[in-house]
Length: 76
Image (cartoon, rainbow, N blue to C red):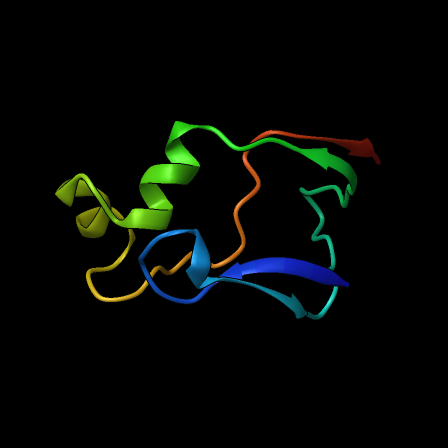
């Protein structure tokens, strides 16, 4: 599948469209085919790594979470 991947903190130019492995669902999870995703302030903070406490939560030098999608619409 294709995904927008964040490999380092910065502006929108650090985002890359990459081919990634499709995740599999575990017993207590569902797999959702995403039709639409939104961008909110939390995504913007994670992209830039600011304010500073974001880096304390999500790793200091590069983000642990590389594919963001907090608000999605899709099919289960």
